[in-house]
Image (cartoon, rainbow, N blue to C red):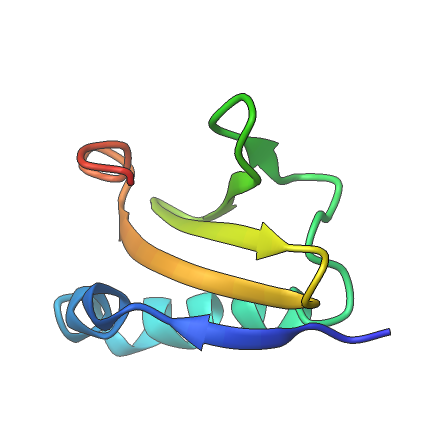
Length: 88
């Protein structure tokens, strides 16, 4: 069973600020979420909400899972020092 993706605009803005090598790793990690949206290295960020993060080097990808509709909404990809600011 695979999940579909939705992307927030800020995710693409974040990718524009990241080096190409890191972007490739981030995109690869995001693609893997289609088959397993909760890999063993993910961490739940907000109680009551299905908001998670995965680590990719010095970057964090923040995303939300909608199990009912089988969707993963990618919120942002930021450097670890800024990743947790302004999470919806």
